[in-house]
Amino acid sequence: MKIADLITWFEEWANPAWSESWDNCGWQIQPGILEQKARVLVCLTPTLAVIKEAIALKANLVFAHHPLIFHPLKSIQVGEPVGEILKLAFTHNIGIYSAHTNFDQVGDGTADVLSKILDLKEVLPIVPTQLGLGYGRVGKLDPAIKLEELLKIIQAKLKPPRLIFSPHGNLGEEIWRVAVLGGSGAGFISAVVKTKAQVYLTADCKFHQFQESRDQGLILIDAGHYATERPACDYLVKKLESLNLEWVKLSDEDEDFRQFWN
Image (cartoon, rainbow, N blue to C red; front, side, top):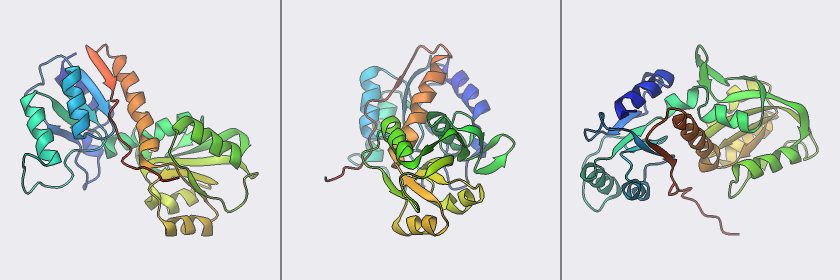
C-alpha cells in the first residue's frame, strides 16, 4: 500500500477535521513520499531517538500520536531537537504524521483501547462530540471487583512506573462503573462525575484535582501519560498490519520522560 492510500484510509477513520482548534494533527513533515510503499514506525512521541530508529530500520513514515509541532516555530536551528529532526527527516526522506485529538475520539482510539484493556461493558463516551465519537469512555465492570483488585489489574496491564490514587472509601470497596481517558484528562473530572462513574483512570493530575475528585466522591487514578496512551499505539500497529503494508512496527525508542526516585 502506498503512503497516500494509507493516509486516506486513516483519515476516513479519524478525520483531522475532528481535532481541537489548538491541536496540530496531520502531516508534520511530508518530504515527497506519498507514492512510496509504506514502511511505518508507530510511536507515541516523535523524538530525535525515534527518528534515528526510523533511519536504522529504513522506515519512510513515522506515525505519531503527539504532534511534532504544536506552536508556530520562530526559528529552526541545527543542534536543537526540532531542527535536528527536520534535518534528518528531509535528508532521509522520512515523513512524520500525527493523529492526536482526532484519534482520541474514535473507536479503537486512545480511550477506547483503555476500555477494552479493562474489559468494560456497555461503553459510552464521557463527552460525546458527534455521532459515535467522543472523549473518554465510561462503562461497567461485570462482575464488580474490589478497588484493590482494579488497581492490581491496571498495574499489571499498563505497567506504569508509579500508580497514584485517591480513594474516598477503602481498598475493599466494590467497583462496578469505571471511566477512562488516556493522557491529560483531569479537565474532564466534572463530566466524569455526571456519568456516575465510581473510578476515573487518566493521567497528569495535580494535587487539587485529586482534592476535587475526592470532594465529589470520585476515585481518581493517575497511571501516567505514557502508560495510558502507549497501548493505543500498539493497537494501531495491529490495525495497520491487517492492511498488508510492506512493513510496520511499534517504536522501541518511545520514552516516558519521567523517572521516579524510590
